[in-house]
Amino acid sequence: MRPLSSGVLPLFAQRWSPRAMKPGVNVEQLHTLFEAARWAPSSFNAQPWRFLYARAETSDWPLFFDTLMDANKSWVANAGALICVLSRKVYTHNEKDFPGHAYDTGAARQNLMLQATAMGLITHAMGGFDAALARKNLQVPDGHDVHCMIAIGLPGDTASLPAPLQEFEKPSQRRPISIIAQAGAFSDALEATWP
Image (cartoon, rainbow, N blue to C red; front, side, top):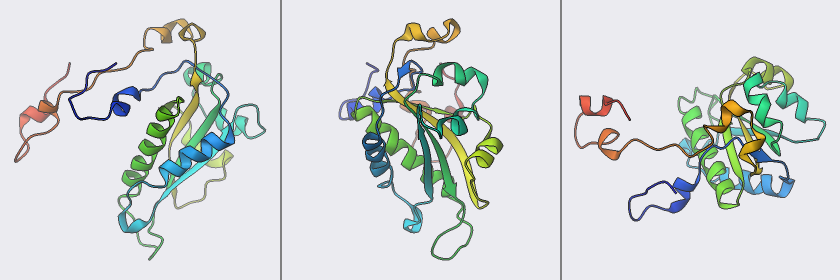
């Protein structure tokens, strides 16, 4: 267990990004994750987040899986589902540019991942994919950004991973509060290297 200050919900430290996973994610579980995501805060209640998904061993799976970089394919092959995270770049109420679309979508993604942790599922978000190919394969229209892929599964065995990845299969630590937050104006303390 990663150390937490008192009063912080343990769920935050329980969530991490393992690669060792196995299939077994059903549609009802995915819908629960999307239910959690939709309650994220959003500017003007625009809710710009969009999620496309495929479960393993379905006809849609290759459309998602084939967009991944080879290094990610080596372990995502054992996942139960892949989610592509998108956002709509304009407000729905006036069709004007929405500068915070990615920010709000990040909040929805975090809701989804915390809900998965609470359900005993594991998630791993990835930037290691071909966004242009994802846009093509998944028919993502202009006006939407493609942000990341999330692999979801049941906890798996570290031994199932390629040897080079096994040493990384542990929760990471976080910067101390002293170098991420301070009273008043910005100072060099917030640029401190860590660890």
